[in-house]
Amino acid sequence: MNNNKITNLSRLACGSLLAVAVLLASGCESPLILDEVEKALQSPIRRTDNFQAVSAFQQNIVAVGSSGVILTSQDDGTTWQRQQIPSWPSFLDITSCAAGLFAALAFEGEVWLSEDNGVTWNLSKLPTEEAPQAIQCDPSGNLWVVGSFSTVSISRDGGANWDLSSLDEDIIFTDIQFFDNRTAYIAGEFGSLLKTADAGANWEFMPPMPDEFYPQSMYFEDLNRGWIAGLGGVVLATDDGGETWETQSTGTLVTLYTLAKSNGQLFVTGGEGSIFRYDGNGWKPVDHGRPFRQYLRGIEPLSEHRLIVSGPAGVLQIFSIGQLAGDTT
Image (tube, rainbow, N blue to C red; front, side, top):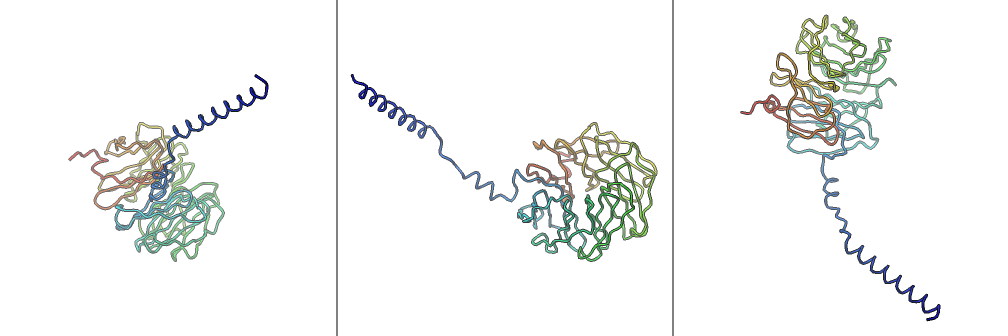
């Protein structure tokens, strides 16, 4: 057999093998199914969402997260609507006012405002380059934002204008809570706790919390009795308005993020998908029965003795108080 015939046969064999390989590959490969992908994209809540905070007013609930994501419900959490602010602000916190105003705080020094239960949002810029940390609405409807370098911003007209003040201390303020139109606490790093009795005209430094504690959240049920949660699984409690503090055991080292009280039960969210409940003697982990692997950050009381918690991986979960308190009845 001459060389030309050998070459032709080799080419024919190679071509046949290639055709068989193509047929086998096409026959074994599963068809690409996009139904589940499309279904996920149509869902208002997605596994890529990173919810940082949630707030409620009457039957309206708003949750905010990174990348400008806003989830709203106008039927107490039965259904949800999704929005995404085009500039993708990194939302940190949200509050609601008695008049129904929602105000969402973003890391970029922005406050996004909605007066129609989260249907539309308008931008308001804070008057400082310092990093904001928390937003709160006082009983009169004034908005307060605290942040780095001991800054306090206040708007008395629904976010249209802001007044800025600073104590000129290199302290990050992390939370603020008002009791009435004149009285409030601010918590911050290095164990800082401040109190005002004149609607923020003056702030008094209280005795520092132990070990230069870094707080994430505080909850005072009155001017004397309060709790502050933060790093290392620590919860501090006071019975004298912050003059002295007691460390309460949680049995964990994960960061604790947000305190909330509902139906007489006090809870705090934390790292590794944890929720803890205060039983009057100490903090007990809650067996909530959900496969949360990352931290839970937001928590908000709802009607009908319920709580909603939020976190990364699209976590936006409503629990009954009885369920979290271990009430099987």
